[in-house]
Length: 113
Image 1 (cartoon, one colour):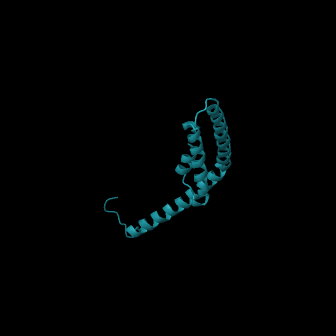
Image 2 (cartoon, helix red, strand yellow):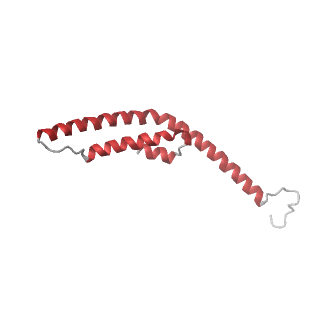
Image 3 (tube, one colour):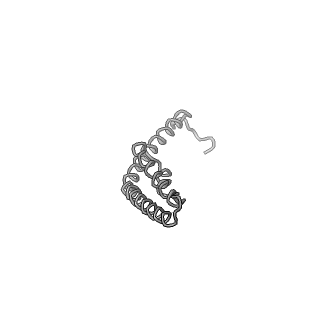
C-alpha cells in the first residue's frame, strides 16, 4: 500500500469521525432507554408484589413483637429485622416512581438486589 495513489478515495476528517461517533452514541442511548423501559415494565408487577408482601410481613412482625412485649411488660421497640424489612419496602417503592426517566439497567438491578 505504500506509495499507492489515494487521490480517488474519499477520506474522513476529524469532524466526520466526531459526527459519526455522536450519531452512534445517540442511537445507543435511545436504544438503551427503550430496552430499559421495557425491562422496567416487565419487572414492575414484581416490585409491587414485593412491597405488598414486605408490608404484610412487617405488620405481622410488629403485631407479634408487641404481644411479646406486653406479656413481659416491656416497652415496645421495633426489631432491627422489622425496620430492615420496612426500609427495603420503602427503597423499592421510591425507586419504582422513576418510571419515566429511562432507568438504566444498573438502576433496575439495584432495585432487584
